Length: 462
Image 1 (cartoon, rainbow, N blue to C red):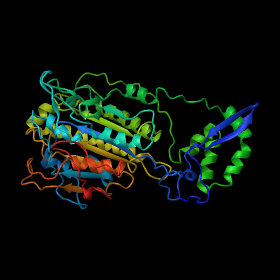
Image 2: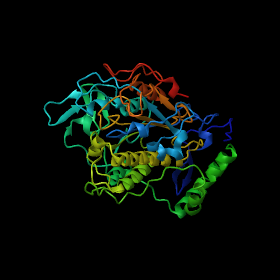
Image 3: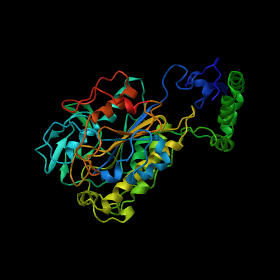
Image 4: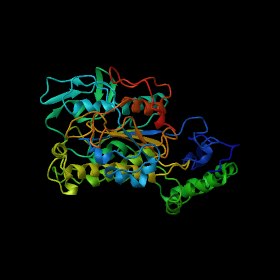
């Protein structure tokens, strides 16, 4: 990137002129001249967008097929992590950490502490296994930090879902959502939406896209031509090329912009609502649509924070895409080949999401994986044991240089044997504080009570 250091533009710069006695103005795309000399912030000093996604893949994994055999930077993908091969450099795997949950366990729910660092709140008034979140989840802590830094988007955070089918035996907010905002005792739970059409409406339904006819555009360009020429004299070569593309007729504009870093464009509203019954849900399609909507929301800066619940605590979803008529929760108890396939199916969905973010390039040359941090985990290490130690954790992206890159396998404690799901050290909440420091370098802690963290994991940071 070649930035002309003696000239800068505000991100809000408009080209102006007069047409028919009225003043007209035309906005600009993000240009290099709007960035600082290093290209890592706006010229006015505001940092470039940094995003976050938390992901829940319920019912655990099979540790002997999921945990990599090697540690550190020289590691290889395990059998169940093979879908991440195209994005391995952007993947860090954390194993052997201890969940410091300090309450009375009821199976599955205690492991959700991995998403917020608080013990749950028992709900004896509800049927079945029922608990509520004990404190804000990591996505909302990140959203708080982004908001405190001055970001005002049309959507503070986005909650996505993959399947509609959870566990009828598990109730309370811990079992139904992975996003909770506010303070302990005064939380607002934000539930996932598994309908792509509804998600589109929440993101883009209120956008007003102005008409862009060639005749009107050329008329506007005629009257602002002097302003354009003055601006061109101060721009570098790449910015002049980008400005020319921005000002040309719509047909040629589309061709030229396609070769440049993408700009915000409202995607078509999906015609798919994910209304099918269990085992007939088209979950690969749902994930494809959700991944596209999330990428566009980030590109358009509609939001910078999202949570994505693939499947919930003890979910009774049936993965019909791969021919399953049994539930993932039931398969997790059996620990059989169907369980293995279901885990692989979920890993593929996360890998596909990461690949879509990696395909989207911004003006500074980075892709959305480089400007994002992804955190993913599940409520148990292995479904057939219900252990909440050695819970699998994945980190994706680099967070604009905050996380180590290429990714590593960080192992807090080695296993005694391949299926060992008890040996653990450290604190899973330390991962959350490590993430939060990317958005709030002054953050002192995450969580409360026994699982609280006041320490980061240096090995995970660049």
